[in-house]
Length: 445
Image (cartoon, rainbow, N blue to C red):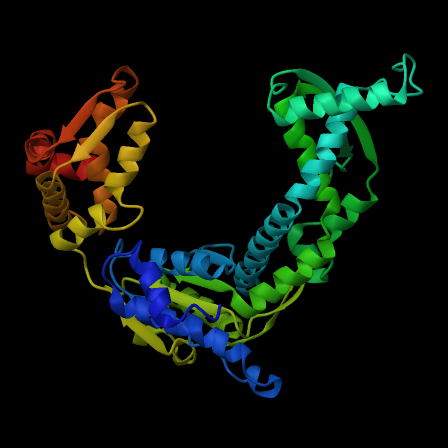
């Protein structure tokens, strides 16, 4: 984490996200401040609260992508939720805490995957031994033992060599797997269990007896199944839970999308605004810092980073209740995207759309190339459609590109070893009719 200076973080985000320098700078500082907090003395560390951020900008300009890429960069648990869903009928204040529970589940899965990856070599070695036992079931002392232990050992090593050389991958083999017999009736609701602060699911899993199940599958499938079972057997679930909760508390990120939808634009406080303000007040203790009961243990939210986002076309950030506004001290405006930004989005990022489509069609043996003029034409048409219909930002590029390459994608299996050049003429001819017909454009693009 020490090497992730704000400048380095912005440089990494630049690989995937075009423009929006102010937003990148804000999140980079917020992440660096987390590392700085960890370097403080214990008595001061808990006093430093995260500087939560509100991103203001239209849809499709990169708000979610910035937060998601940031979380991946620092290996932090990340959860995106739509704030507006908590205004729906049936949601009450307690349900707002579900975002923290969901974040903990993300962290548990993340840590479990890391632990199992770390044990991959050991689990693979154990799986190999069990696989050899299945391939050579009649060893010394069996019903039809080999002549000597030495002969059995030689045969086992020969099979081991064949396994590692991949020469037995499609051979059928019968293996024994363990399965737990789980109850078919749900005794407690998940909400009730969380309120009680006890993980009944894992308790039942430990209490339920295991049964041996014989399965016939290929060696390739058997190796994977046995390795998975061995890794799960080695997994220290208590350590996973403890690490996951620590990771959520110290580096968790919750992205609150559509926060403008819960802003009360009518100060008279009636109708939908009552529900919206209620959600804000339910969010407030979580953002301020509270303790939430999850099935994996108690989780403090004091140092979770909250990144909120909204278009704020009707409401304004100042329409949020003052207490919640105070908990989002950093506000950044994201720029609308036009033709020039679209050109860069199509070509510069490591995951640029032109590269994605080229790679996809290459799997069919089809080579496609985009001329500079074609890229410019796609960007120009996408920007025009955004101006004439609903502005959905860079998402428009996905719909335009999909329509542009529709026929090639459909016919690709019969076009093996062909090379297709996408030029400006092809772009204009393919998309001109749709772009000119506004009603058709609304329907298709």
